[in-house]
Image (cartoon, rainbow, N blue to C red; front, side):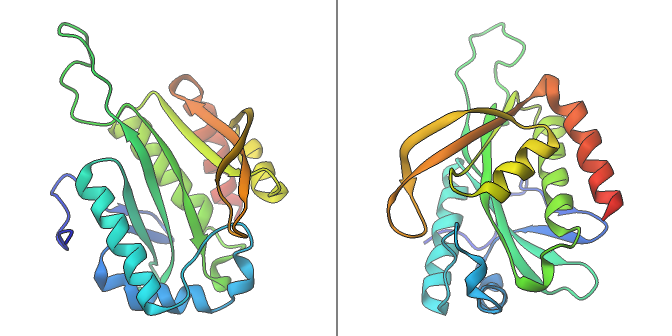
Length: 213
């Protein structure tokens, strides 16, 4: 059974509109309520609808956290403390740098992916998603000193692809039959990435978008 208490080095990311808390069993009821506000939103993302399914979702995320390969958050609205969705780092990799290299012994991950992002209906078209991405990318590149962050989406998800391109993510190609889609087919994934050298420009764009919202 994964630990309900996250390790001390796990961050809580706090912005002006949302707080990203390491996901735990205390969030299950709030996540269920958020997911059931409008299930039709989740055409491209698998979002559990029942309490048992959500508990399994959270327990699985916590086990991945304890293994050191991912970190899932509950997205909490600051003004009222309501859980409005979830997002996560995953496929976190620690590279085996040789002795003498500047990154040898680095306890933080070198690269990761950001995804599994969903929001309840009332949080759509608010600053929540933009601010969450800004906080997660800032932590990845400035606190963890990552070299690369990858993002994938279903190749059919035109809206998500446009959003990634708008903030400056670079399109790398299509991964065929890459993952199970929300409609239970082998989906083709559109692959995007940001590398450390590109982060200042991406940060500028996200900051402007967050302010505009």
